[in-house]
Image (cartoon, rainbow, N blue to C red; front, side, top):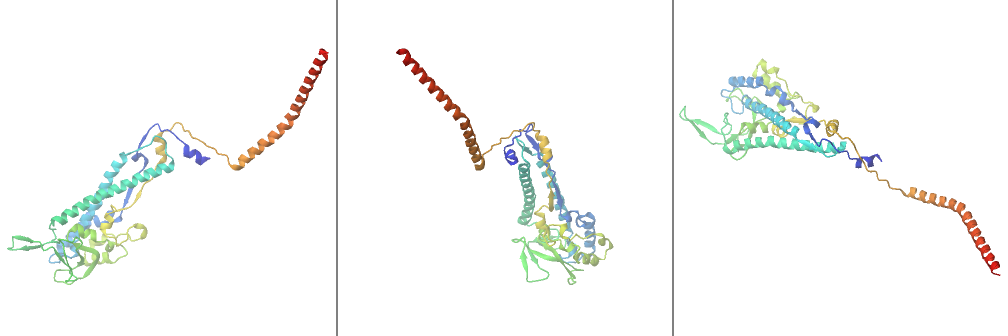
Length: 353
């Protein structure tokens, strides 16, 4: 019966609209890299300092040239946060319109649907701008300041001639080449070098130099910087700077992130660097805003077979009792009526004689 009442219950709302901002509090929780030491100004400045000391004569694959990757990573984290903040302001002003009070289940379904649409739109807006930036960079073949995609030849010393070589030679496999002019996936792994004439000291896992800085970041992973890897410690020790040891590694525990440690930065960016959302719904707030003063419901009852049979039997039993009482009375009355008419007839005959 309770289910029947709930399905037909209608409670008109005095206030037909309620803003989403009053009904749900959306809060994103970002990937740990967006709050890590790797995107701090101190870390980036120390990389700049290291590059001034060690980059002279070092090949373009040297780790000292990676500071731009962390600068872009910092910008993307901030950009993601700003995009979400602006989208949340817009989402909070949208309204749920209901003429009648919704049930808890229906309220949750409608709100969850609106939230998923909000997430999809926010992600699409964020990625659209990134894709535009990447396409403009690739189509126009802008020269990166580290000459990742073009070769700069100076002849004479003060005249620079840019020849579009657009070829990356893998320092670890001379036969492996890739043209930046028609392939955005060109990449070569970063390593540790003393100078251009020294052999490779250490190959940094997951960190790649591509044709453009944004492509370098998106094709790289953060696996080197997790606490279950020796990579970050090797890098710190290599440069022999005490200040580098203050920077903390990323947490590699399974509950720290939904992304595997070897996930590319590009795959994390497509999720806006978000680990999960907190989205508690408030039905009580919705009820208060609806302000229903009265409710009505329709209850339809149908008799089952057992009840029908019981009713019929009851009727038959009642009829039997009634007949037992009424039949003798009716018979007696009929007999009395017949006798009276017979007497009246006999009396009439005698008078006529």
